Image 1 (cartoon, rainbow, N blue to C red):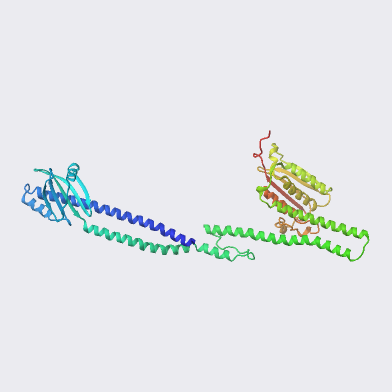
Image 2 (cartoon, rainbow, N blue to C red):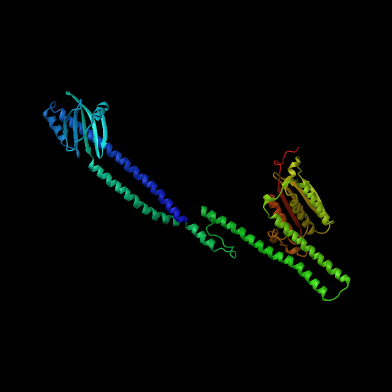
Length: 463
């Protein structure tokens, strides 16, 4: 069922129930008022009849005449009976014979007045006393005129209810269409968006209502999708280039070597060159594998409590093993009194790769023999690592692309590398709820800041 139809039916149902309840209340209280009012009229009529019949010999002619006039002002279908205290009928008028049981007479004598109904007829029984003793008067009538009005009222309420339903149904349909117009517009705009038109944005994102919030959320998602597609295109393009270059070199050298017989030294040189290219491909494959590993579900990564500073020293030792000429100056800033504030929770192998990538990049893009400044510090909630070099730097336009796999800045293309280190480091840190920030100035150097949340307060009690 469409939302428009559902809203219309819900709106109509709620209105129908409210109108039905309102109509029932009107009919009920109107009926109650009519009945009580007619009982009062019958009661007054019973007193008039009793006065006219029983007090006729006790009043003057003028009063008797006045009582007679009142007596003949009958109610519709009126019937009246007067009984003695012993239950003997002494007076009766009206065409309708009313059977009053002895039990009813006793009840009237006991209570003084009794109102009850027999079908459409309403009856009132009262006690009346004069100089001859106590009597029971039972008067009855049918409120034909008001009952007919109540019948008309019922028809009017039923007809009005059905008529109102038709009006509300039509109005609800139009209201639902107008209310859903922004959503319909969003749907039509979304249907026009394809993989080749991810730069399109929804137009209803400037307001503060729920539809505008939906449009804003969808636009934010499109921003992320567009960025992801751009990264994917860049990744595929750069990966193809990085894989094609060593393969093309290897194939070319092998083809040249097979064109004619050569001396052993030349064959050795070709094999050595191919070996270096094969190692580059191996490093590239390992980098791709590590990126894939760093993109898995964080809940599947085994984590333990680790000393942040020890990880830095391990990464420094690994970097020196790979490049013995590397020089690092490791310092501490505001070293905490509680060493547990240096503890983080994470996967040791992945974090070691992240730290090592940052250290090796600093060495790779700095002048040979230059000392890399490494600073470990502690903030209120995080442990930070700052690695600063005075190398080539990164242009401002390239900084926003450094976390895209295989992207390499224009000023470092002549330096060996694949553009995998920083994207891999970024993904590893995200798996650990950490962050990486890069600040750089061309020909003045780069400062990379890594932050990881402290595990302080979550470390199990030591034995």
